[in-house]
Image 1 (cartoon, helix red, strand yellow):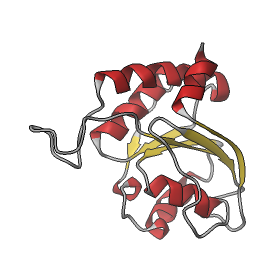
Image 2: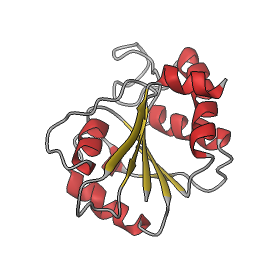
Image 3: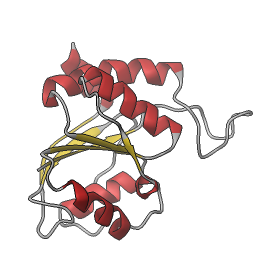
Image 4: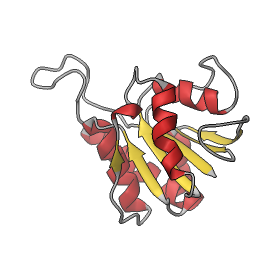
Length: 165
């Protein structure tokens, strides 16, 4: 199973008047960069069997931009288990229903994604960090992990944009 983990793109700054702190949309620049990065994702992955996102608008919009670039025409799944502070156990209980899928894309937020990736690699500390629009691929036999996965690649948004050109 290939698990792809993608951090949302650049969002409106925390504290911007008129936007709730926890559910801020992507900026115009964030949308533009993600659209270009998604071309690189398409070259690397082609498409996904399932896309699962945090319910927050910046993550959902990131998932939608990526889905469109990759020709993914199924429903994007949304779960609160992709939110920062959600217990890993709850997320893995949710994800075990997708063990029959080969390529899973998870879209969310730091530091939650860093802990998730680190845990999937058999490390109980937060050692992987995702910059905005950054993505990794981890190969793992099943979810929840019974043994450590393998980090295949970890790319920044800028590297994904370069791959898409």
